[in-house]
Image (cartoon, rainbow, N blue to C red):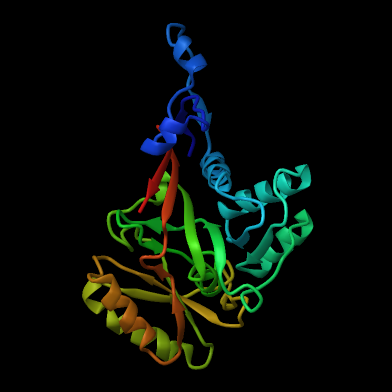
Length: 274
């Protein structure tokens, strides 16, 4: 949905230190003249947040390249800056086959964690962000590779529009993904549901569109999406309980991993640092 959006600039040092980008002087001087607000779509807000995150990228870095509708803008921007010569000697580690293909098409040099076990910076989106920088990721299906790459980085910048901010993880009522092996997936899904019966959990196998064909991850696994009616409580305890189940590969809670969250919203771009 489009929302009103004023004119903002991103080069003011003081504004960056406070975390809030402020209206430009030209915008302030024109306040006496009535003007219509700029209307931006959700995708345009995602692009604004992504471009702000890429300002943290420096030549010579090993970068974790995220996956999804927000991260794609960051990858595009990195490719653009490489072509222009503003960035040099960048090495990207993609978090999905889709991002791998995108990066190759943009001419971004790629590698992997075997060659570069320490990543300087990762930029990726999130499906939910709580006030403590805990995340839900993986509604695009790439949670395992995202967690591997972003868990190896020195700095992890999360880019979102303000619709992704929640009070509690799972609070949006949308999916909490869990990647599982295909073998006896119904059994694993039932055990996942039982873990969170007190939270009104519903466990659903992710499928392609309206079909019954299971969605298959880049790793050849299935995804069970968990939906909660109530708060799931202690996140670390919930994480441990999920990972202890045989058949579970990984879940979409990214706890205590993000170092910076960049939010694009009605009042501009906010940079929040842990």
